[in-house]
Length: 489
Ligand code: ADP
Ligand code: MG
Image 1 (cartoon, rainbow, N blue to C red):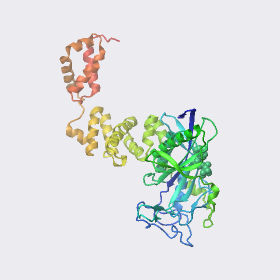
Image 2: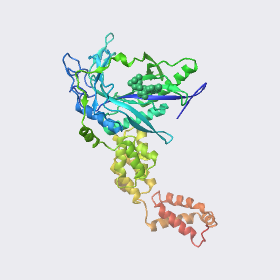
Image 3: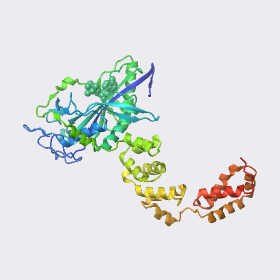
Image 4: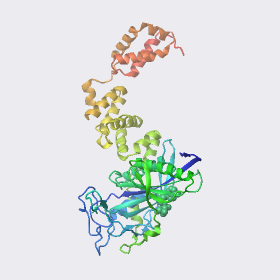
């Protein structure tokens, strides 16, 4: 828990998120129009989306399935009966004059997300509910100096609104929650998680209180489309509220906007009350009734999710919690690692993936999907190390060449003549030369300064240009130096 130091003592931030996740589906929630991103304005609008009189919405089974899949992935209760309501408000880009949403009877009830914190501890953030609703269209203010244009391509696209309980206590926890939720959605394939394209965005609710006191009045910061903005907006808003209270004022419940340029929040509107929306069950839609078999069928196809994968990486493969967390953070990374580790030393594989591959990807700004080194080639490199064909140090050099050229390790090792020398005769010649070249040091060693072994190993490795098998070098040096000596321990 990280507290905020005010002038009058410590304050605690309380944070809850309302996340809007665009459902991965070819067509919209209540129409057959396409959901593809980036189409010509108004090219993907059915008569239902345009709210032509007399048009009737028809629920898209695929979207329902995706919501249930997400609920199961969040370990949440699935409600076999749920109801679609009309949430009434006016927006120029909302032709119906209402949004079809779910209110008192959502499709998914309470669940939980585990987040791993920097200090190695974990924390559970409870999920209050998940419901299905329609997205609105988009008003374009920059196409014409005097008029606003409306693009309805997004109108009617299915969203899942995922609401957390106010369980987060710092901006870092809010960021960790969003990161884990996005990973779960991506593992499930129910939302692509592309925050830049707006497929995933969050409203962040923030209040402050004395540690352990009752909940304070919250403000809601709307529509944040990056994890960094979530962290920055929450941090700024908590500090703002502390300053208001310490100045003798009171926090007013309101909706605020985050200005990404200045990193500050400003008021947008005072929070409307639920009754302002005049929610009522949409008479065009029957209650949504699911049967157990439908839910069980989806449950049977759930993939292994980040938490379970992490446990398996730690318990069955012997990885550290930190390494396991890094690897499961993203589905592609986990899959890549598993392909490298398959049938090999998992810890060695994890090292190469995290330290070398991720390091090189970071430096070159590439995503794992675009890695120039395939998992099978990296696996082959690990095999070469394990078999003693190359040393770990030479392997670094080979890896660099693989990353640059996309070639396989075997051909690079052969072409550059990098095979490790394990032939005892050849190594013995090198060792003898090193000992002959440093008679003083040999005498010191034999006089009891056995720490000098490292020096001799270094010299021998250097003389072999890194190719001598270090184990053989060690053994031979020890044997020769200790020859005729009593061991001194
Ligand atoms: P409402 O029905 O007024 O919208 P909810 O109970 O649905 O309120 O909560 C909306 C969001 O605000 C949830 O994510 C919840 O966790 C969060 N929240 C509620 N109370 C607080 C609070 N005092 N401080 C911070 N977040 C809060
Ligand atoms: Mg609410």
